[in-house]
Image (cartoon, rainbow, N blue to C red; front, side, top):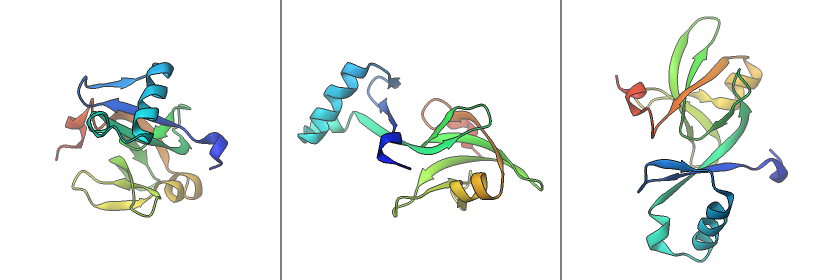
Length: 125
């Protein structure tokens, strides 16, 4: 992914909603850069994976996706590995596979059905 394609979204943990106000996002990013630690704890930044789901929606870290292969169908959480790659994580928190490999190379059909903040019940066993 090129830096020009870089995107993210911000979850406000205090208000329990995503922030879509561009001005507010700019202020938050400035606070984060200047290490306003009381502000940092109120927000979670979720990176865009560089991949779109089957409906053309951007897939972000923290999304819950329904994924279909020729042999299986499952729900998974999109997570980011400590090395910076995106992967799918099962309901039991097991590694399923690289998001880019499964979607781009293997052709898995992927659809966003929710996210970890607004739909945590989707990941309950």
